[in-house]
Length: 467
Length: 96
Picture 1 (cartoon, chains in turn orange, green):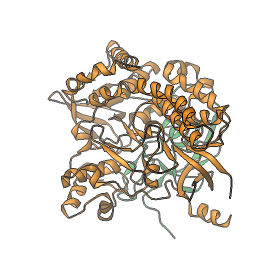
Picture 2 (tube, rainbow over the protein chains, first blue to last red):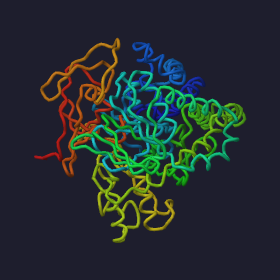
Picture 3 (cartoon, helix red, strand yellow):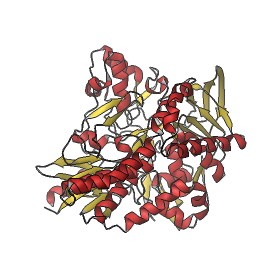
Picture 4 (cartoon, each protein chain N blue to C red):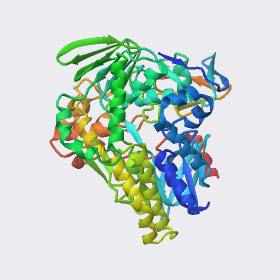
């Protein structure tokens, strides 16, 4: 069997890169596995390539994105072993380590890790509205990824949703010359009033810089005359084979627009697939309507030797992710006896301060942009499990027939058993069932996540046996 | 639909169901096909409904395609390569 590594990090976004850099700086033996072909994660996706070959676009993306280029440059030279284009599909707990199976270019091999750091980040919250499975309807983050990874711009774009990314994406598209047709804000009436008591705390630390950015994007959109609709509800995407129209209600008026591309966004939630498969304990966050892994102040999960850093542990953004990555790295250095407890805590202190400064704005943003009730309680005829085409109504009917939780919903309906393996519908199925059963979401629980976590061929599995 | 800004990356040509398509080195198969104007990437196994990428980051699996003869590959995660053979995936697979 191969080397026993001090740490294996899954994910080369800000958390994974920051953790790897600190570990390597202390001569720890660390391997970073990442699904993408270049470092940066989704937030800094394509940053090296854009800086090198698309200077105008790079300039236009702004200073926040440019920070990724520095982070990547430090990571590239830190001494950590970086393995891009590796999809982790199975992790096996052994006596004193974890065995991590990753596939790359059709071949799989195991890595042995004394410590495992999951830095797999966030995913966009699915937005189940009528017609959301039509081609041309995408997450706002997906549109941003197209912009970052290749200067690919949407035409006749309508942006619908609530949260910072709505305004950032609109501003970026506008600056790149792809003027959005309209921005439809789904933030409910009353959300601002509810969030205001949290504003004073949001002005601490780095809070003002986040608030300032948000206001400047909104000002830009107003100045440029981008059509803005408020308190949008009753969204329906229409089209025969692809999206062509969007119908909605804004402040009581029924309206529609034609659209070539529709970006939906109702915030981001932790990507939980690997942590779930391992059996880490999760808790339901009733404000953000998502599960979060249970972590201590260093990012330790409820399983020994398994840590989580970055947005996968709870949404804090890219800068917070760097700090939580270094906190987890400090803990790993302690666990492998490179640092004693005192040295670890000394290393952790500035990271905790930095983390707190970047998280100060979060309670305000979380309240302001909490998903509206319709986002997590779709109408009966709306598809919830996109892969198996299971509607919210079918899930409620299964509850009426006696299904007690998501694993029974699998047996009744196959919800969560398609290609995405419940990544998209998982939290929704739990919440819909909990509401129907009138029980807490934590009680109803989550779909059991099983390997392979990513599609691999039978041939690839067989080749593993032969080796 | 989508359009592409000019950039200095080298061009790559791949095969989409018998047609040559030009892409830029470094981008994913899904990005290349969206930029080329493709809307339907796969048809679901349940009802045959046409789908296209939702997330572009490996979560939704609605970009599943047959790439170089291997089915159910996530087109948003596979970097495009010269001469790559890409096909749409239609409905459930017939197993021999």
